[in-house]
Image (cartoon, rainbow, N blue to C red; front, side, top):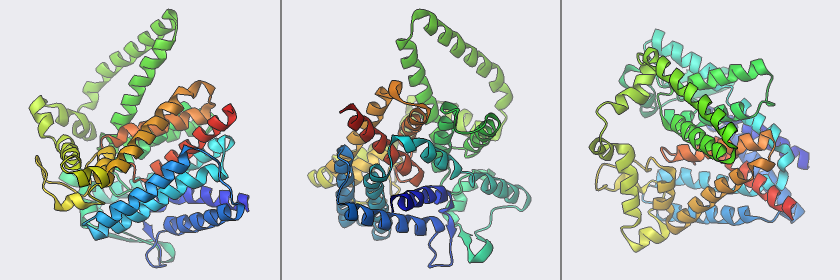
Length: 417
């Protein structure tokens, strides 16, 4: 029974890249069907065993599901609330279930399955690149084999084809989410040499890095760079003077190469969009007026604007019908942690604390980890840093990495005892 459930989990992770593909069975995707079956069977397995492993993850799962119920009840955006309530339930279930069916010995196969789940990004990217530049645009509807199909609404296509520039995003709904996922895949491939043969690993690194750039989004790239800088600084501080000097020379060499190469890349349209156009005329005033600053700021102000908002939040997607002090608001706040605070109140604050604590706890144990555990930890932290700049916590790829990270943390504490 356990092996069957474990295989269902692996299959669900593998199919996570098919979210955009609808089936003839009520419009559900293959991934959604697999997800529902896996959660149902796994919960039955736990009920049958009548036991779960002890750990803080149980409390996190409880807070996640209760805060999701409250955010659903107080929401004034019913259609948004229904879908995000279900997502909240699935998140709490995966946090609960992974430690019950997997342990640290399974991290390698889980990580490899995560990487494999994104293979589908490559044919999607090639097809939509071809359609955009040879057919004048990406179609709203695409028929596949066996009655399966892909439907893209106008808003999704606008995000992917803004300003006559193709921004890769499938199988996700926005370029920043694909950017976050690709950044997490890149750091896993960089830090775990055992995942693939050298040729396959370099091929995937090159492919995923290219997709990361062609999303035209800075979300994952900034998360990746922030992690690299902090990680290198902390490593240098722990080394002897001689080893630190070698690291410093290496970093200096990389910076010099970047300075030499950058002028040749500055004409690349994606580089212009991600960096050059954003930094031209940069000032404190331009930063303060940027929506990626004003929307999260308004979200924080909404959270502390009343006792009710502070305690229980405004509910899923309610910000769409609110007026911000600095700008108009979407149904989320372009920052996963601000969204947790504003929508879930104090329970959202608890979740933020748990996630940050998990990141710090795992990173502090990296000396005791193997390659698979380290690379998973690094991917989780890159995802967390990227979530500061967009809504990444609601992405199933991140949810899987987060849930596996809770499992690894539980195992460390059990082994220590």
